[in-house]
View (cartoon, rainbow, N blue to C red):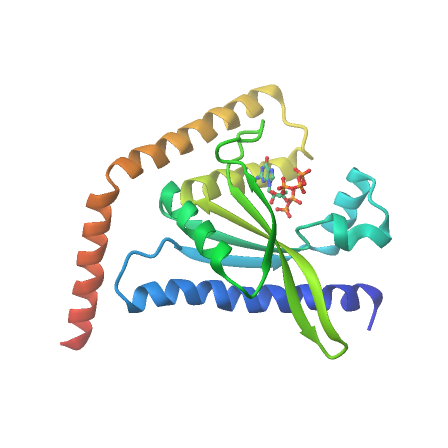
Length: 210
Ligand code: 0O2
């Protein structure tokens, strides 16, 4: 086994376990027929090249990688409404299978790029054959609109290597505001939307029974 496989194995384990646990929360809501604040969950281990790029950019020595790069293991939880993000964070705070060590609210304090999301960094215990290893995991919680913007901006950022032409940067900032206005508009008709969604999921269940 090479050094990287060994280093990343517990991170992969943590992502796999947390994906099941966090998706399970969605399943519980479905079972009880109540609106789930979680739309879907994704997870990944950061590719080695991105870990090295980040370490290089931030001047982090290799022996400090695991303490200073908090998103080697990363989960994303997507929500329909901004208020759902707060419900999800509340639920994460109540769990006792990990400890929250930092929260970063890029919704009240958006980044200069226009980026919005709520980040929770946790210390997660992975059980290995050599005993318990606590690793850092970053959970990003965002609405579908915030996710749409971040995904597009991330691909463009890759294309321009983070150095956007001024025109593109400006348009991205405007697009971020438009996405946020969309979230605000949706929040205003949230009850109507949820009633319709509850109606359709009930209808689907009844159709299955026939
Ligand atoms: P990837 O490819 O998603 O893994 P820094 O990286 O210095 O901004 P730090 O301290 O690592 O910040 O923590 P932060 O900002 O809480 O989390 C970094 C991660 O948040 C990023 O990981 C992205 O996933 C996301 N993110 C932060 N700012 C932006 C942004 O302006 N646009 C987009 N699209 N995503 C952002 P990586 O390692 O950059 O990338």
